[in-house]
Length: 272
Image (cartoon, rainbow, N blue to C red; front, side):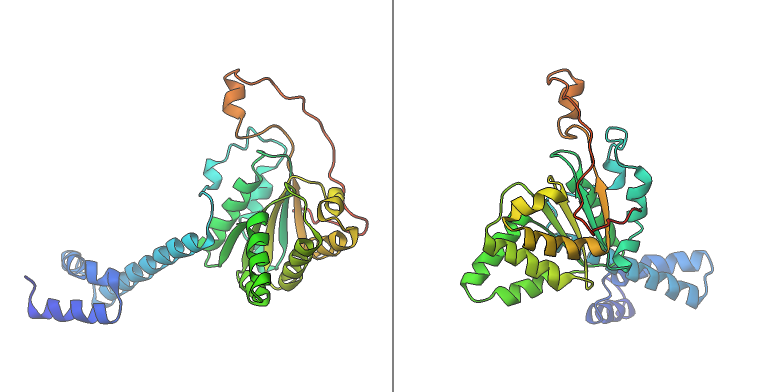
């Protein structure tokens, strides 16, 4: 059992919600005596422990709220398998200058090329730097907005998706949109324009977005806002998810093609 003084300190820490200090102040006081630390050195170390603990817990909370499908880092990605993307460009984006400048990032490429993986890498890095992040697929987004539209809560839901400093919108291009859904997306992109950054992944080139949205005017309006301050990264090559099977010889080698993504007239994606 602790002394009355220890118990008072523990109670005070609990009331002030200094969880980490409450855990370590006794052991750290012993270390301070052994090393002949000053009172200020001891206090400085305790506060450093508390700040780091709060930051770590904040990262865990923000990561859970972001709703990533999985967690990956730069160290997890095999850049050698996908040489079409310069590793330096991804690392430059990981500096998060694009977030500070309220710019967007768009990954274009075939399924399995690592678009979502790279988007998650940047999202996790943003959370570590203290930014709020939300990850959602296009179909999940449209489903949520459609439901709120029917309940007369569309405006509130759109505001919800405009709040995060970074919104990651995954899987544009797998299913066509109807007119109402295209308008939902336009409202979201317009609401975030020059207010918050977006990372978008798509398996369709920009030239195909008019067909995807069923309306060239809406597609152009969406692209105009997305590409105004934007880094476009084109990914070519076979599926990253199938690489192990191909290496093992259980799948045939694909026929690789080359080509450049079409960009609407007047839209100039920024290179990193």
